Image (cartoon, rainbow, N blue to C red; front, side, top):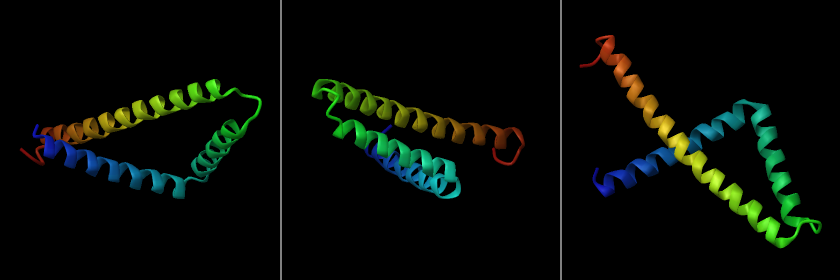
Length: 96
C-alpha cells in the first residue's frame, strides 16, 4: 500500500479507537473505575521511594512496550473485523 494511504489509515484507526475507548469508559462504570485505578497505581509507582529508579525504568519500559503491542493487536482486530464483515455480507449476497 502507498505510504500516505497507510498513514491515513493509521490516523483513522487511532481516532476510532479513541472514540470507542471514550464510549466504553462513559457507558461502563467498571471500565472507568479500572482506568482511574490504573492511573492511581501508575502515580504511586512513579512517586514511590521504596522502588529504585532502575526498577521504575524497567516497569515503565514494560508498560510502554505492552501498550504498543496492545495498540497493534487492536488495530489487527479492527481490520480483521472489517474484513470479516465484508466476507459475511458477500456470503449473504448483500454486496458483490
